[in-house]
Amino acid sequence: MISENPRVRFAPSPTGYLHVGGLRTALYNYLFAKKNSGTFILRIEDTDRTRLVEGAVENLITTLKWAGLDYDEGPGKDGGYGPYVQSERLDFYKKYTDELVQQKKAYYCFCTSDRLKELRDEQQKGGLQSKYDKHCLRLSENEINEKLSKNEPYVIRLNVQPDELIHINDIIRGDVTFNSNVVDDQILLKSDGYPTYHLANVVDDHLMKITHVIRGEEWLSSTPKHILLYQFFGWEIPKFAHLPLLLNPDKSKLSKRQGDVAVEDYRAKGYLKEALVNFVALLGWSAGDDKEFYSLDELCQSFSLERVNKAGAVFNIEKLQSMNFAHLQKKTDEELSELLKDELALSSFKNCSISNNKLLLIVQAMKERINFVKEIILNAGYFFAPPQAYDQDAIKKRWTTESAALLQKFSEVINAIENPAKEDYENALHRVAEESAVKNAAIIHPLRLAVSGVSGGPGLYDIFFILGKEETINRINIALEKIKV
RNA sequence: GGCCCUAUCGUCUAGUGGUUAGGACAUAGCCCUUUCACGGCUGUAACAGGGGUUCAAAUCCCCUUGGGGUCACCA
Image 1 (cartoon, rainbow, N blue to C red):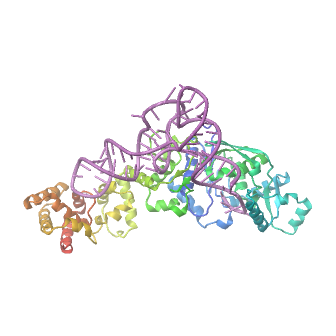
Image 2: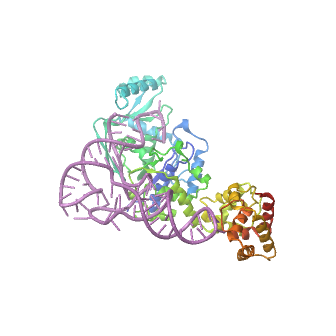
Image 3: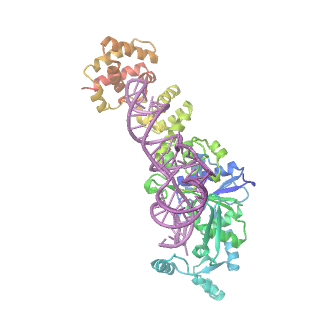
């Protein structure tokens, strides 16, 4: 159990959409906070002006909210540590870099990007790690002032001392040690006056009293820089937890090239938030038992960082899909028919009026045949309008020379029944089959084809009942005209 | 390439010195069935390799190999 009330943050940069990896990071932060009566903070890291995307912040917030991950503090929800957008915190970064420069823990650098590039190329040619050579550290105060007065562009760099061991005590990975010799004199303040991630992140985490930094493993190798900064400032170092990466099927870091990575894409495809959250939660964490279906609340109860895995996890869409199916089955028919209504409004059937009661029946008939609600429309449009075409393969296979006569007969029999129930349709069919001395199947298959246009689907009598007697007869008549062998 | 992380079925994982190595997805077969599904049952399938430590190693240690991340005035 965590003693104090932890404060954690999800700190995305607003460069477009919420990545599913980001969703998982946000989720683990959220779960950790909820489990330990902590605070979940959203902080926007928009220090790269070149990559800003308009509307990205709003999109991020909307998507997080959709997933059910409401933040306790963040943009629009000040908890006394704002602002929560880094571009509005520039004064802080300036103040703290000045402090570092005064103490010679950071220094001015006037090197051009050309010189830096040359340096890198040379080092790479020699098979060395590319690292700044502290060239500008030699500048005297006078030289610096002169360059400053001439308005020469500059950056501020971290002054890393050699031959020091830097320990990271990671909750997931244990002790990880780096030699400071491999740590570059990281740029802290860019020439445009904006901080880099490393500086802004450390300053804000300190100022916002973040107790646990839970982030992706791609940050592990820059954590020594952050530790150094905490030490230089004399600040308490938060606990770190570096999460295993989400992977493509080929085991590389999950990327756009190999499929959808935006949460909004999955949302648009019809994945339930419950399924996506459940799936992503289990990518790198398990409670230690065989339980596999969790609500967000249950996750909050069971989650712990100690049980997070170390190795990366492949984002397996098949499993996500089956999870979506499972969560779909858990929804009530009423919930599903509301979702169906929404989908209908977006479809070509938006003008077809259909009663709530019928919607409910359709949902019941279809729910175990779909992975997404919209598949009811895609695969069973015949509930909303007569079929436009008839499956040719099915015709070939199921339609015989006597089909027409049998359907005609069936149509007449049900026509005589007042308000037929499902059993009435079934009895009628059995009667026709018996009188005509054919198997039930000889009628059933052509009949299904006639009313739905396809060969698969819910129980035939369910379809009749949902369609109603008039419509059923109507469709048989249309089919008798259109289907010729 | 340097540094760092990592390694149980195809995939997600359980397992923390003694298990017939368990579950889920996927896959194959069977059953149910008017179709398509659901469901039920059964099967195929894993401890990367090599050294140690130990009476005993998937579990602890070392090496190798594989995979990944990172080396920007991006986060």
